[in-house]
Image (spheres, rainbow, N blue to C red):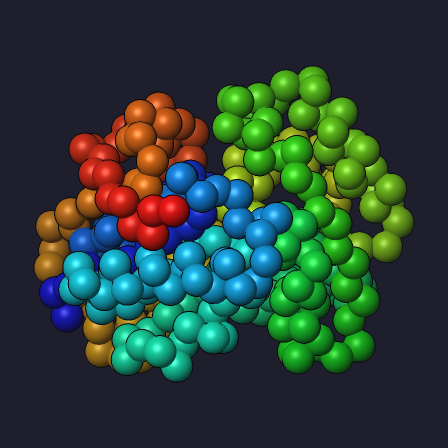
Length: 266
């Protein structure tokens, strides 16, 4: 089906999901919305996150998308189940693909999850994991400082290493054998996190979501039939400059033009 796929996040991090979708489905047209005016979602109430997420979904539906990827872990945890019955098109979050990959990977049945405060408090990953593996031991930790450090470009900085050691050091060699990177910024820190937790399998929800999207579109008969590279459109709710400046850290290449929308302006 030759209609675009919508992807949204509270800000920039969802570009890591978009990057994996580009790799998996290069011929699909993609529309990305970063709600940079209202980021972060991770400290907001479930009601507010749901309202913001619905406004973005409505915007994407108006753009004619055939499916929506909720690239934000917080929205996936707090809003997705409320949103799904409101739309006739498929909505896919990052939480369930990440949980399934962790269940497939673990040998000790001890799984860690790191994410925003909202994602961890929601227990969304823990619930999804235990639905699939009832006896699993799931431990979670909010790692809020990782987001500004990534956006500062400090993915390999000594300060970031020290923060990672504080957040994660007690898990080294002690308990978990699998760790879900439950925030779209965290794949940028994958190498550093792996050094802090050697031997632990890291699950990138972005990569797993792209695989799940490909399977979902095939099942629904919605895969695009084009062979050339798909188009890309980028929207932001705040000044486009920040999205443009930081995009390469998440997406791996420069953006094209970024359009601004006053979507849900307060």
